[in-house]
Length: 518
Image (cartoon, rainbow, N blue to C red; front, top):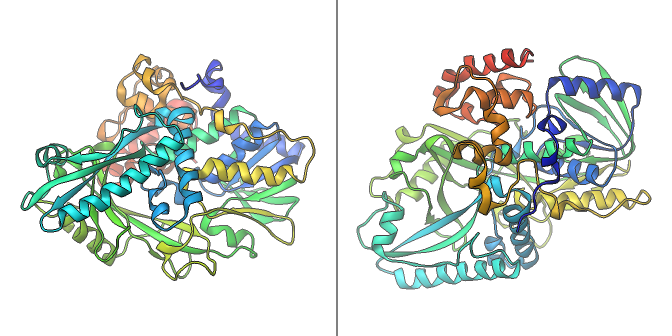
């Protein structure tokens, strides 16, 4: 059973990130600039490193040029993968690692931010028997990983066949001509990847880490980092016993010794109503591939995401990648093969794309989909450590390995404890209905939902986002700008109409908190 989080005994203020705390910690670092570890990058890897280091008792500073989850970590498929895809390519070790980390996230670390997601594959004549056997065998292999990691069946059920009527009930928009039935498997889903990053960063702050957004590392070596305050304009040199680069696909810009081959993954955003309000992941095979699929993902605000492409991202790396017309057409075309009324461009209310940092090597093919998702720790000539590769599901293990490399340089650093350390708001999955708040807030804040609900009322935003949620983002979750609130704390900025309808309410949240947006 999930243990109650250690931090729940404290008030939310002990883990709160906000403009006032940022100012205090910048001032304190000016007086005492020597620390144990500086982490560069505020995505899931950087936040995980900060938590691992701080929970071992190391004086830790995380610096991020923009905002928490500004880069790749907010553009994922919001899945907690069990590693099935890696089994298909023979990467047994990383498949098991993924399943184990999924187990920890769903049962101990963040049960409030995760849920089981049914993955439904419709089967059509001709060929439905052979395809069903193939997909069913894959799901059984995945379930074997679930059992090996001891994830309870009450969290992730066993896979199995679906009758035609069962499949239509679960996915009402499915094409019914020649439909024979289907196969159902299970995997984990995050309610929101950016919320996971914020929760990790806040938990790190509860253990004493300084989490500084809008603080850009302009020079870095193995024992020091020069940081520019992107709000105040000053510079600060931090001296450290170790510096870790966790900037993902941008790692080579911090350390030229790091070489990656990025790939781009694109998603479409449509109204869930267009898919019959389905709450499952409807899956369609990518033509010509036995291991790649396009799938729907039920998401927040009555929307569904459709993904995922996997193409090389050549040329300069943008802060915010964009979907291409070819990718949009490909996703619409493939998912359209299993829909009674195929989606069109007019159904797409938004798109988003993320960049993955993939490691290359002589054993991998030329396609980015063939490259390893294994992470690695790279040490440069200056002693700077870079944690590169990997994926969202295995962030905790990446962080553990990164701080283990730091500990090898230092003395008397205890072992990692993050495998049993719940994040802020965590509460046993089977007892979440005990939390005295609306289901909507419990899904977002877990055991902290009553604190958020108790904030003063004010102007609400689009899609039912309350004034309390906006103010919580400012006072507790480190939002410094309106964009931070809309793009990463609530995800309302994803759709232009939602952003326009919510900007005034977001600005009002800063006024109620007594601080102006940066």
